Image (cartoon, helix red, strand yellow):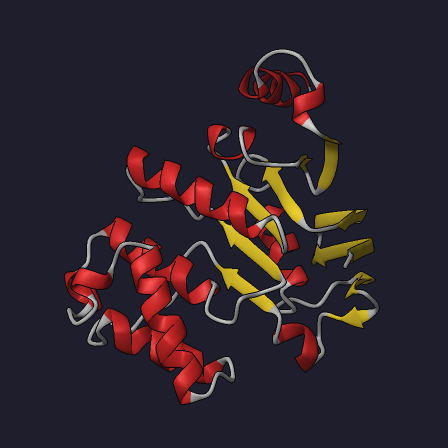
Amino acid sequence: MELVIDRVTKQYKNKIAVDRLTFALKPGVTGLLGANGAGKTTLMRMICGILTPTGGTIALDGTPVTEERYRAVLGYLPQDFGYYPEFSGRDFLLYFGALKGLDKTQAKRRTEELLELVGLADVAKKKIKTYSGGMKQRLGIAQALLNDPQVLILDEPTAGLDPKERVRFRELIAEIGKKSIVLLSTHIVSDVEHIADRILMMKDGQIIWQGNWNEQDGSLEDFYMKEFADK
């Protein structure tokens, strides 16, 4: 399984948000680092088929991201995911399960599994508007996992989580990465330092460094700050 990003560009009028990127993603966790405005979210939205590239192609084993069979194996948590405040956590997941094509039995089983997994089983009947920011974020993570995705795209997924929740989330993502392609965008370097098989650093729409941090010396955060300070 391989997700190939080939010479992908996205231009908005006079601004090039993503500049002729070429790389491939295989099963495992890839951490995407970069300051605000680096092009991370634009790149992820193109990988999810939400934005159309100005140039280049994105495909999973030859299947373009615009095709339904790609969307069927995709999980996505945007930075600001939409939710219905009057829905309960359980009803929200059941609703999204239906949108993702799960039958009623599958949707119910997967919803209960994920409520337990993200620690929301005890508040499953409560309305989302009563949830804390961290609880809403955990619900967002659960909806991204509903269809047991082969490709999981996560944009700032640990925003609003406390340190204990972040550790639990990292363990969950590391486990998912054993069989799925996971792309995790964050500005919190420690969230990817210990679980990412590979790191991509973006600046001004380009990748300025990529590699396996375990093969490097020193702190990833120090290196990251140096790269962005010096370039």
